[in-house]
Amino acid sequence: MGDWSWPLHGIRLRTADLDLRVMTEADLPALAALLPDDVEMNPHATRYAGLDLRANRRAVLAQGYWRALGLWSPDDWALPFVVRRDGVVVGAQWLEGPDWRTDRTVDSSSWLVVAARGRGLGTQMRAAVLALAFGPLRAEAAVSSAVLGNAGSLGVSRSLGYLDTHRSVLEHSGETLQHVRLTRTAWSASGRGGTDGPHGVVVDGVTPALPLFGIEGRP
Image 1 (cartoon, one colour):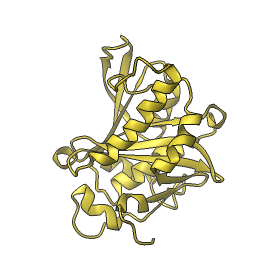
Image 2 (tube, one colour; image 1 turned 90 degrees about the vertical axis):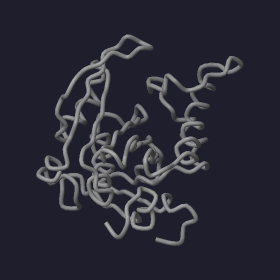
Image 3 (cartoon, one colour; image 1 turned 180 degrees about the vertical axis):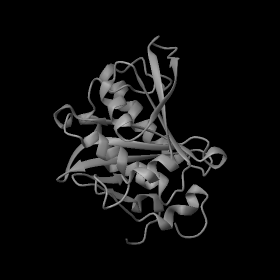
Image 4 (cartoon, helix red, strand yellow; image 1 turned 120 degrees about the vertical axis):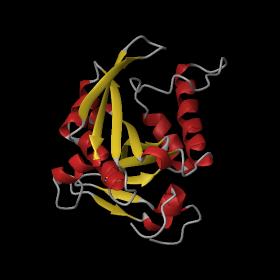
């Protein structure tokens, strides 16, 4: 990889069908134009009375990106990836470490354009960030959650070895969330994370960024 003023932008993940690169400000217009109507946006994000629904969703997307990289710390970080297939943007994948140096646990969220769904790409996206988390970032566990009606997200989690842990209720909507968890031991035993695994995951460019995750030395 070349020289990077912000090392996070040197991280690249690849799978059998996808290329994931850390989001830049230049990606925001394309992502905003593709943002599906059914994506659950952060309910706690600021909404603006003078903007319509679509414009407010675009604002949440942009401010989420700026907040993630602008407030980055080794203790609390969020890393957004743009997902491309054959050079075309098809979605976004986030990996987060909200209490990273305390519990070494990552969370994740993602979305795909409607036309790209149902092809196993969501599983590849998640496998890619899990390979990053359990590989060079040395995570101990990964968690995720989805409303009970979101069979796609829960299906991705369970196909990758996550186990159900508990349920909770969303205050803003009253919907029930299913929480799931995957341990480092289970991920390692599954063989899903490497180039020889079923998703053909390749992780590049992480070493220069390790200090930003509070990690010293090489992965």
